[in-house]
Length: 357
Image 1 (cartoon, helix red, strand yellow):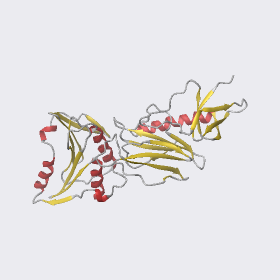
Image 2 (tube, one colour):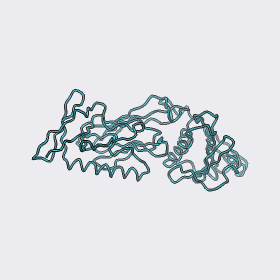
Image 3 (cartoon, one colour):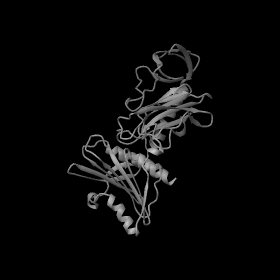
Image 4 (cartoon, one colour):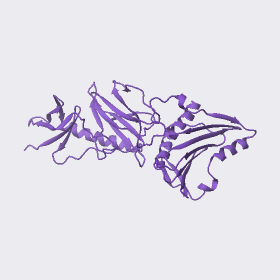
């Protein structure tokens, strides 16, 4: 007896499910895009059953052109097994996905299967990578550092198109105002190739190095005077004196917290650097800012201070949107280097990282 079968089609890939038992591939449409392409009409999919073969010939209505894909039952089982392995690898890297199937899957020009998952980490989801796999083998992520957000990853012929929001200075994480950028990733037979450079996520597409504030350099009579200058930038020592760190910021970093009289703060240490975020209790999204800083510093190296370094991210007003000013200063003997930058703290971190490279 033949069973009725339903198929979800995605740009040449068919996923086999028993009718009535299919679950949505993506439970969170606000963070990840639906699996199916907007040009695919899944209600028109149908099956021509062949009792003597272990395969089904699937015809789907895609736009005005009918196309057919052949898939075996064993291939479908293998694909889902690969998906489970892909999800496990992403989780091992500290990221999660919101469904059991990729955000996009395509056949490359050589016939291989290229899949892409949007992985997120952090409580608010504003720390994302696209994870790519070829025939179930991990290729890597779309970029070297995580993006604040990724709008979508969709099939585009034999490639995968990823759309990124672009943030201008003082944009909140929820409301990027730059023009979105779409980058198409194509497997060329030996590596994954983007069709354009990746945009800096915390800057508009017109931002250049000329928009960055300069790093100042000042010499003091003694190393003690230089150390005192670093210390003067930080909050009072009593502010974070109580108890052990309790706020988990990811990547093995926990921060001390302090609050009172409408003010609050986080403090943590990375090497010889002390990092503080000082804000008003009315400000929102501050923890995510801290998590993004930790994620960035997990893959990027600041100068090694001799002996002290301080990063102070301080809110400039009581508005709901967190609009901070970042000061980064570090000591090299009796010399102090210092940068002050308004807007997203990542831009200030990038300036200092680039300064030493």
